[in-house]
Length: 103
Image (cartoon, rainbow, N blue to C red):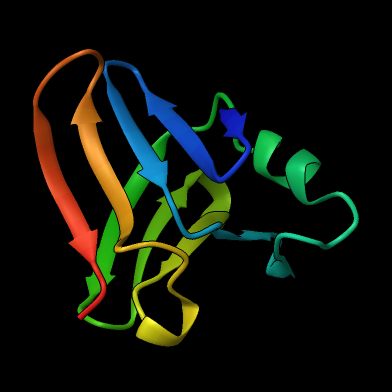
C-alpha cells in the first residue's frame, strides 16, 4: 500500500493498481471512505490478504475482494471523477495492463 498526495497504490506482487479515485474500503461490511477517521488504517488491514476475485461493473465500479470478503471499490462514475482516469493496472516498472476511464 502506498499513499501519495493525490492517489493510492495497491501492490500485488509484480502488479500495481493505481487508484486515482480513492477507493472505498469494506472491512467486515463496514464502509470507510477518504476522510473517515481510520481510513488509511482500514486500507492497511488488507496488506497480506490474498485476492479472491475482481468484479467490474462498467461505468459503475471496480471491486477487488480479499480473504474473508473484505474489499475495496473504486467508483467509475463520472460524478466521482478526480482526474481523467479512475484507476490503472500496470506491471512494476513496465507494461500497462488496463486503464479505467470515466466516460
